[in-house]
Image (cartoon, rainbow, N blue to C red; front, top):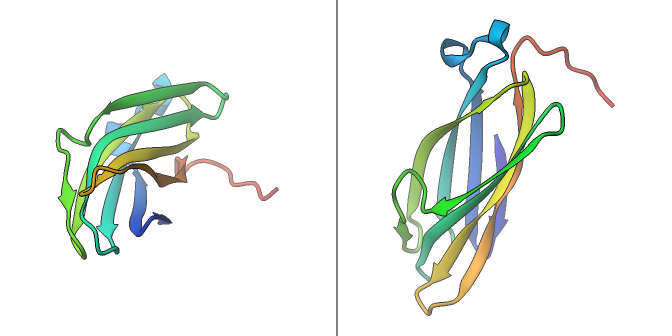
Length: 130
């Protein structure tokens, strides 16, 4: 589990390797990730768009930008949460994802809420401590 908080918006990410959707013999690896967005502040905020930076083990980077998440632009009032699950394919058995959600307050102020960097590691990966 990975967690970051920006302006009272707490984002928690839980990635999970999907062996059912992966084909290691064909260099296809897939992870599902569940994200919970929790408004710890007093003002309502709305998620407008997302910006992902996805890096595989070979250093290849892909940027993904788009409106909302899973087709939604949730409005979160004080204490409310929104959770969704999505997925990401890679050509390597490990990688890294990070990003931001572009949020807007009820007063019309824009800010970027940090999505913490999270590791994507297939269970078969040999772990090395640096």
